[in-house]
Image (cartoon, rainbow, N blue to C red):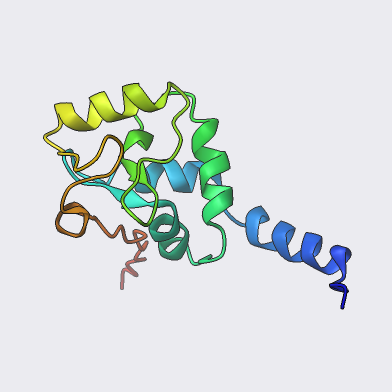
Length: 130
């Protein structure tokens, strides 16, 4: 039987997921990942309240105007493999190695679970003066 899912519904769902994630929020979250630690595209999406938006996070990171200051090299796939990088995979690996990250295979992080960082969205707390 042929898949009869409505493409319009899927497109609307994708747009509603992606429209609410601002690149500035993603970049701010990236700055919280300490050197020598990594996070995943999905971890960032979850922390921004949109767990299904990991691909959109990847798109935002691919357009990062300052990939060294905003450390998108610290974002990897959920299985510990490197994933993409605007400046090339070899540069991403070199940057991570410079921060002390070790690799089991050429592009897979050693003991990924030990250096995985789960970012949290910073909450703004309003203080009311009396």
